Length: 333
Ligand code: NAP
Ligand code: G4F
Image 1 (cartoon, rainbow, N blue to C red):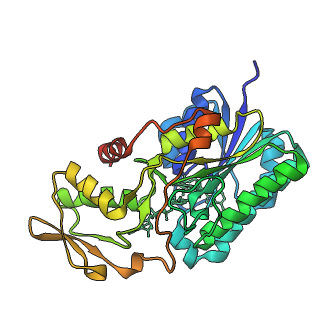
Image 2 (image 1 turned 60 degrees about the vertical axis):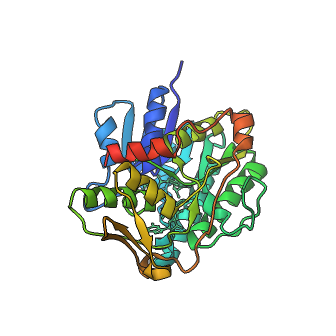
Image 3 (image 1 turned 180 degrees about the horizontal axis):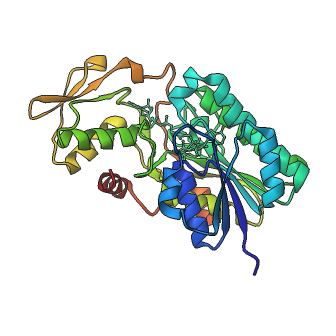
């Protein structure tokens, strides 16, 4: 039987590396798109697939329409996963136009290339719970109204609707995974979970004095990236394309996540003070403080996803809980 061919935009990221691993196990030929950078930025994939003949990388960029067309024409993929994004919400306040170019128009460029090249190619869009923003609902699902709080979230809403529109207007297999936060040992260092794990491990080893955080009271629904890329693949194997919330339906504050990590490192945190003066002490030594530079002009207060539709239709449930997530992150930090 002919092997399926997948093309992944954003292959060098956290999800790109887990998805590559999954698709190679499923006997796909995987093509990944990497960006040119002055230092090597492919460590997440080189480490695992460098010598794998079923895996190939190509230069490209979702801001470069010609490279998208060229790759799709040359590779002739069965499935395209668009994971490419300026994925940091806080950074989207600092480089909003660039963020919109990549996160909103990038998706449209790929969809248009599919439409003009071969409408049978399936398309996955990496949509985000940031689209819900401050929705006013305690639990969010596919029917919850979007109220995004950043250019990142707004760009993802554009991509969500453009994906739905190409599905409806051109009968394309185009679908959205609305993924809630998912983490792993491969998570980028500036996202809060990785920053906390790395910071506390370094403090424990005496390599770092303090961990400086922003909004400790922000609440997220954190899953494991391994489970979430499996959901991406499942979404692409359905008879009909559709949109699905992927989450754990459990939520924790940034403060609670910090306490859970500290406990596993045998560090008991005593909190003192309030607001910007709140500090965390271990054995009377100040190890955590708050700085306004890590706050966003507008933040999403709380997220908790209802994955009932994915459970029913995709037969998907998350396999790993927050304890597994923290253990894995601690083991490989
Ligand atoms: P990530 O680690 O930041 O990876 C993003 C990927 O996009 C990287 O490979 C990056 O390349 C690439 N990229 C950035 N700009 C690009 C451009 N102009 N052209 C081509 N590629 C570009 O993010 P992730 O956590 O794996 O997330 C994957 C996708 O899911 C993203 O779209 C993100 O917005 C979305 N998402 C993530 C979560 C989550 O909690 N992780 C939740 C919901 C949705 P470099 O390596 O060169 O930077
Ligand atoms: O880890 P974060 O930066 O993730 P955020 O903003 O929720 O976005 C991530 O998840 C989205 C899905 O909901 C993805 F679409 C997106 O691509 C990305 O993967 O921040 C989580 C929370 C925020 O409320 C932030 O204000 O933690 C708070 N926080 C508190 N101190 C901090 C910090 N965030 C960061 N990055 N750094 C801090 O020091």
